Length: 122
Image 1 (tube, rainbow, N blue to C red):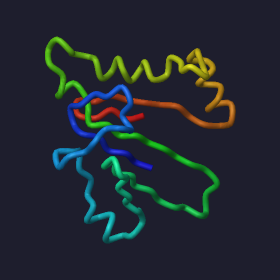
Image 2: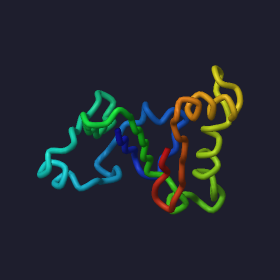
Image 3: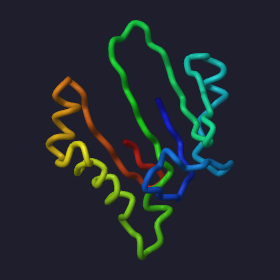
């Protein structure tokens, strides 16, 4: 599942973000031509791209958010990268980074994220 958000906008709850024509783009002509993926647009404007792979017994989820250093003012430099790290520090249910890690990696999963100039991926 790939989720795309409006470039340059930081939200405390990114799933509620409303998209516009300026959102990050993917080669939809490639997706339509190969019919490997299905694009669904939710009521809130979030675009979700899915692919079914019946020969596998695993799931992969990536969330792509159009934020990075290119969209940060000098006074905000590094905030995208900082927020990326905050996402793995704890939640009300799993209060430490270790608990988050154990919940995913304890069943064979992998947690990773990265921030670039124009994109943050979880």
